[in-house]
Image (cartoon, rainbow, N blue to C red):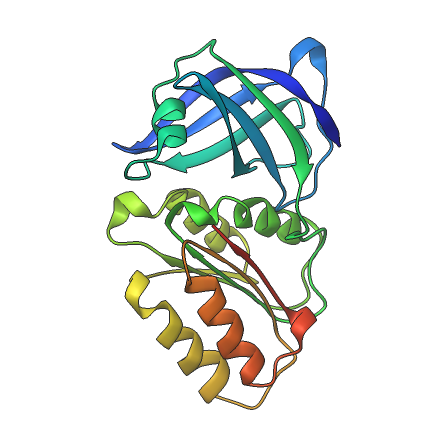
Length: 228
């Protein structure tokens, strides 16, 4: 874990939509950053004469710790997101980390449901890739909330994973329908409470889902969440 800032540089910029981009950050001198799927880094950004510290989930796989991908969208009035979205290749981005306990190291020992809204799929992407690489014995489902194709970051990749792996299902869902869909399928449909969940979203969405599932009888440890 890096407590002192690492001076990474933007090696590549990928535009997913007008206000949604991935930045690929190269660590210096061939260094690697050991992290777990789902963890984040804290970027230190010089904005307006001060240094802003903002967390960004690592969207790439731990197997390549020399090049980190972060995915972000423009936050209305957000100075940090505006700064990052304006960066070009070669720009420096100091960061610390990895941080966080919202992680998944291997395929779960039960049916797993992932729920994400928009770019909040970033930490879940390496979780799913790791789960599929470690011989899942139970179904994996991702509900991805997005208002239109431009909001469904990594959609083509996730659809390809679903075609390649029988155990994995990728399902785009309108954001407003996420809570009702989870309630209908995994609360009202049966009494099975052996499933596990990883929830990530903006605002109160993951909290609403957490409370719904725990109130329905799912164990606390079976409902992992991260609120952006």
